[in-house]
Image (cartoon, rainbow, N blue to C red; front, side, top):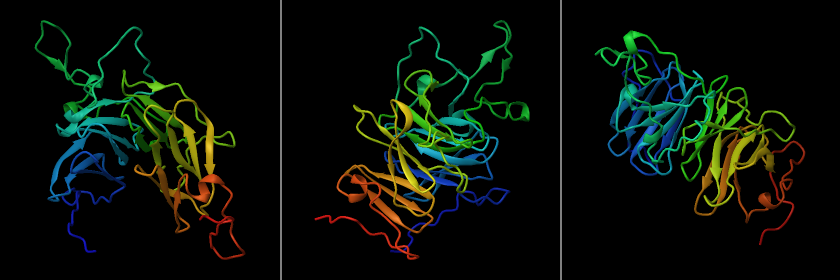
Length: 312
């Protein structure tokens, strides 16, 4: 196969920028990319290679982006500024930002809002008037460059946002912080963080941002059942209950190095992972590695992975 498209989204920026993340929408022809040097997200149409528009708001580099699985217009991003931003890509610039998820925000008692898959129920009012009799408008919460200065934004994590993933229903967003914590955000209500604690098998923090500053995250399972959050802890693939939190319900061992990619295969319900050991492993109900997490071992100094049982 040969490359049929060559795109460099940040080639016109004053500062040379490489790519830290890329996500292809399953519901449209859009690709979202981020850069660790710039707080800008570029949207590219992979049919033509054209960069349609830019989303601005992060004060530092962007480390991860995630498309909603139920809306072609909703995008989430996390950056080195410790902010998680939700975007409506039908707009551009800072006005495309629906809201910034706030770790200190609490549910408003008795408040019930209709839920929209594109996140419009989470949007703040664009402008507020300081005085009803005055025509003067104060800066909008979404106007991040008001009066030429970067506005202070609520924080979503400590130590940056290094991983993002929507659940299959699109109503929950899971994020990983640079401090190793996992958070679940309720996007069907007011966008508050759900009080749910996750810990590693050893009792520490579950996320492991040691490799390239990013944490791979994915969520699998039927919407009607308890879904699983999959992330890495060193060379182990750990599955946590989205509903209950706590310690991992499943720990899969097989890689010899730190895992850097986890991807679900929706048709079969399997997982694919890759790591610094150069291996790509397939995990699923029909594979021996899923039935027994200790089926792999390293023989002498050779890095050969072999099964300890036959798979007919």
